[in-house]
Each structure stands twice: as C-alpha cells, then as structure tokens.
Image 1 (cartoon, helix red, strand yellow):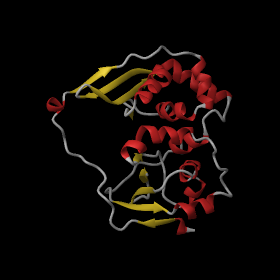
Image 2 (tube, one colour):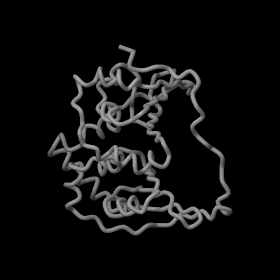
Image 3 (cartoon, helix red, strand yellow):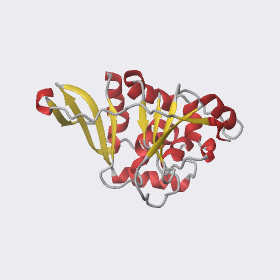
Length: 236
C-alpha cells in the first residue's frame, strides 16, 4: 500500500535560523486587550473548527504552551481579538518597527478549560474529528536515540484514492481558509507539529490528512528514522 508517498532524496532548506538585531528592527512585545469571555462562545466551540484548532491543544498541554498566529491583515487581527483572545489570560503582540507581526495566545483560562471538559463529558463528539486526530492521539513512549530524519511527500492523487472509501470527505472550508489567511497566502507554506503521530499505512485513515489533501498542492512529512515518529507536516 506504500505507493501513496515517495521519499524526497534532497530535501530543501526550509528554515532560516539567523538571528536579528531586535534594537535595530525596533522589536517590541505588547499586551493586547481583548473582550471578556462570553459564555455563549463555549457552545460555539462545537460548531467552529477554527476555535477548536486554537483552544483544544491547551487542554492537555504542558505549562508554557503558546499558540502563535501571524498577522498579515487587519481582518486576522480583528478575528483573533474578537473570537479567540477572550479564552486566554495572556494575549501578546510582537511588533517590528511598530507594525504588528504576530499574536501569541497562552494560559487558557481555567473556567474555560473546565467548561470544555464538562462539554466533552456530556458529548463525546464535542471535539471535531479533524482536531482530535491531529492533537489527541494516544500518547507514545518517550523517544530515544538520535534525531535523524527523512522526508516523504504524499502523492495526493494516490492518497485520495485510498482514503475516499474509508474517510468521508469533509466539506467545511473553514479550517483551510484559516490556514490560507494565516500562512499560505503570505508565506506560501506552513509547518505543523502533529501530536503522537507514527509514519505508517495507518495514516490512510487520518481524518486530518484526508481533509487537507482536498486543498493542498503538496504535503511533506518529516519522519524520525529511529522510531518513525512524524516530527512535522509541511503544507503548501
């Protein structure tokens, strides 16, 4: 069943790790004021996959978790402040030369977290299956050995042929539109770090991969050779 992916022999250099002179660029971090939490929003979580995409990873995460969203447009700033910021105790903006470039969300409010857990307890289908697949897979044992990686590109047409019978096609464009506005339109790509993913043919059952394969031009998986854990998913 392995003809749904191919190895990338000469991976491209993707990441620019050069440091920058914060003083020269006039780099600042400021707290952003957001509306207070509205209880109605907790029910909206079930029907809004973007809200879940941002909030759900904080339910089981370690202390210090931060969700970063680039801000290229005023509409993204307004969306974050109006619909997402109220869930968090900390909403901070990074400014370069007095221009807002990034918003960091952290410290999900305890009352929000408790309400979500109550909703999950009452409704086992509360979390969208795409979000659940990406963030909430069964925990794996600690990784051992050196981190040497290999890259595989999904052959999208072949992948879709193999998944269309087992996974229903998701019609909701909302999450993909969020990816597009936050990353793809301006950066041409985005890189995600899935939680507890193993590279195998079981990925043909992945609801998340099935979803993004309907939209993406390319999907590249970075895999740890020693234990086959997927370290990154690059989407273009």
